[in-house]
Amino acid sequence: MVRKGHTGFVFKVALMGKILVTGAAGQIGTELVERLCSRYGRENIIATDLKFPHVPECEHGQMDVTSRDSVDEFFREHSIDSVYHLAAVLSARGEENPGRAFDVNANGTKNVLDASLRSGVKRVLIPSTIGVFGPQTPKRKVPVETVTRPVTMYGITKIFCELLGEYYFRKYRLDVRGLRLPGIISYKSPPGGGTTDYSIEMIVSAVKGKSYTCFLRSDTRLPMMYIPDAIESIIKLSEADGGKLIHRTDFNVSAFDFTPGELETELRKYFSGFSVEYRPDERQKIAETWPSTLDCRAAVDEWGFSPRFDMSRMVEDMVRNLSDQSSPAGKR
Image (cartoon, rainbow, N blue to C red; front, top):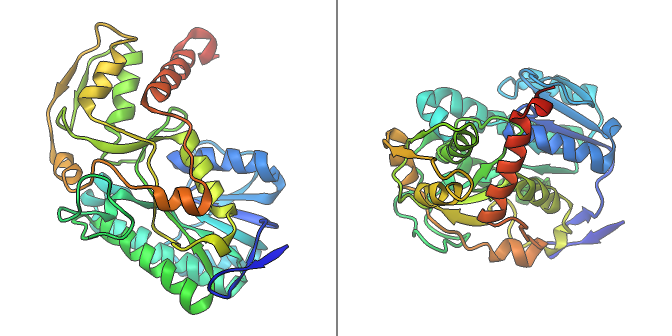
């Protein structure tokens, strides 16, 4: 079934055919692949990355997004209908190696978009980030349309990807979509080198009965989301009726916000002796350029964004699952 959108373009309502996930071995990719397999069938999912620490139970292979030849060859060999392009170098690691971040995030995205055009791919979803904001951005209830002057290579490349995706949509009618993810909290896969990783590290330390040294100040407020809501939001946007979308590649999404100090207080409800020492490092400077809260009304109105987890439910679920993993039964 197809519908005509407000721009006059025609969109497919349901995804069909092979679904490619790049960056499938990462924090989000690992769980997205699992969710897509259960939703569409394992035979319809192709997972790619440079390496696979845990091979998903679906078709998989190695693909280097920075190599145009590698991407083109992979697309030629597979009949791909839609793409979830997750391959990226995150904020903190991007500052350690800016050249690598630019190559993966900017050149890699262009390679995937070009291959998608040549192969007749119907839809490409590219997660963006709150890293696109900068020091001049308002701090609270930040709307989609605002000042975006990032000061990290991660943010610079991601605002480039937002604009590039919009360009390919307008010029070539390639259905590119994206959402600006906040800090993502998860327990199944390790974080990927982002500035909000302290939240996962703090919870893991509390469950293990260890103290924690936080690399951000205790009062640094940032928007966050639990991974089940992040995964469902990515899929929900991809499946949304394109004719109802006013925005394309830059939807703000966030479920809650907190400071390291507030997370420490919440964890003490479960672990009364838990303690945190605050030693801000270079990541503090990155966090200070980001907003503390986002205005997510565009995502709510245009495709029904509706996260289920608040901070308390997230901590409860994280503690339960991490405790299960650390128990003798969980290790077997």
